[in-house]
Length: 252
Picture 1: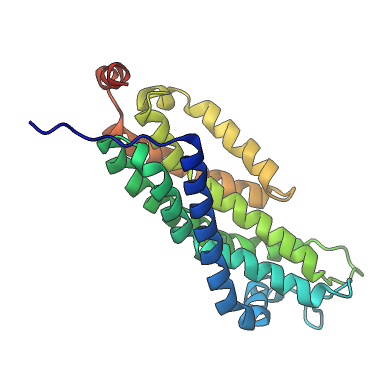
Picture 2: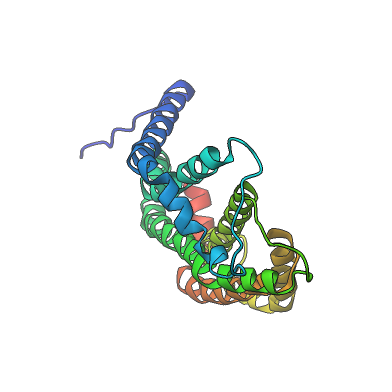
């Protein structure tokens, strides 16, 4: 009977592997960035459409800083490059952690990483196509009479990036719930009993992550609650029984 050969890695070997994976991820982002930089102005124009479409006639965005017309599209293109390269970045993460996972853990983590990417993109798309038109229309409608709306391009970029990250992160709730149930930290039944607290926390998180208005807060909290229910439902199929946890602890 052939004995299984196990390779032992030192801390230095792990650090070298981590450096290699990080370099690959950075190179992936740079490749996408080089392909997009020529279209930086067009990309910013597209991202500004939800605001421009709701601004009063005769108004436009402004640049209050000398370098803003260059740096705002440049910054947006860098962030967009990271978003587009996210599957490749996650692959590098997977390649680094996969050797240390059990076989059953690999079967779970691989689809979760794919699903987390889709959910993150879905959160960004939801913010751009659903939230932005409603929020900007509301902001422009409540402007005091005699106030000319002229949003700075850098301020607008910071605003939309904040919402992109907030909605992208919020849409990861099902992945977090599945992992918590799989590792035995909690279970679906326990999460269902905590539903009233989850509702309150969803609105508090929506208040902290979005601008100080009830519309964007609600439009983040409601998807979070729906995704919570989805995560609990899926976790019911992936929940690890107590005996499986005890067996893995004995093996380790």
